[in-house]
Image (cartoon, rainbow, N blue to C red; front, side, top):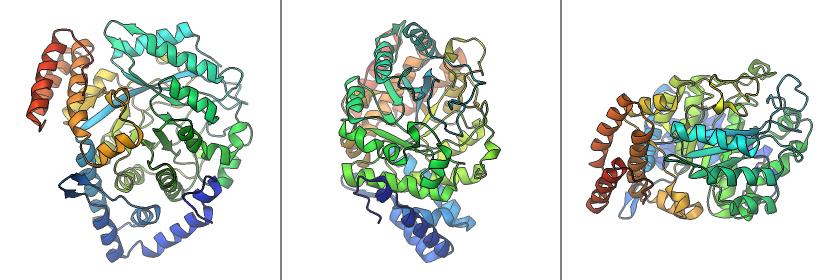
Length: 479
């Protein structure tokens, strides 16, 4: 029986509840009165304490996803844009993945790292190689990484991950520094999550891949990841271990997207019900071609239009949660979904182990094909030309604004008093240290314009002073 407060995966991701939800959505997909009431509930509203949103539950959001009435879909897109602007403004946070090891003992059918794949070269970075990769990323201008590794207790034990995190944080090269390390590794124990917390990680990220248990078991035939409940309950153990920012995600294309969408929102509702704070981020990857993997073998692929609608409805349903899109997606797809709700993107990603130190993009250890292969400078310039502020800010973690503290600031809209100025100052650092002359010129014009959008005169005065000091060589100012 469905119970969002249960710590058992079979109860907070209840198959019968999802099927009932999908049936309800089908029955009401043309019910304009209901659809209008759902959209009305989701709209931002103002009080003397700020701007707020109620969000939507999985059943309400599923009705909108099932609705195909063109003018209502356009209303959804407009509402998603409105919510995105209200809570995230025009900032886009930048990051890059860093692949540490592709050794893996699992048999996942959609991932080239699966144990039986004998085509792919197996590689694990030494600490010296980690250092070289980090310096290469710093030389691009990155300040935030998401480390990735296959599940292998012999080759990739928690001690190895912790050593890599320590190495990453220790490297200072010219003006470069990685100020935040997010971690995307396999489900583990409360004790190991405590170790990651003590190591100073940012967000712990774990993709569910699919919430459909029968499909999950079929897609993960061997290895520890085969245990659906252990995997699905990982975020509860992470939070018990002190990690208060966690990131969810499904791999769209493995199972029917409406089922996954409902399950994803149910997981977010579960975290809110049990821990008082929902996911810090939600990622929206789609199955892509890779060594030994043909996406066409999974018959649940979704169109770009459906993908955009999913992104818009995630933004409407969980308005305060960051949304991440990777370089799996093309420039045109990323451009559309950034407008509809995405708040974090990767830039200049290489999904191979040791890929950043290679002059030419290596393909022999890639986890998936990268669609957007532009440099970080090109991505930054592209964002600014569209009116967005590329942000390299990591201040919230370093100031202790995590978990419910971050959410309380975000929900009241007050986070923008920190984030907007921090975005401008970290962008100025990038322009001074890494940008091309043309990008620098565009960026300075954007910063000059955006300074005027800082509402607090005292904050504006401090930002102007700090920007001058950044131009003179000082670094790492933050609110």
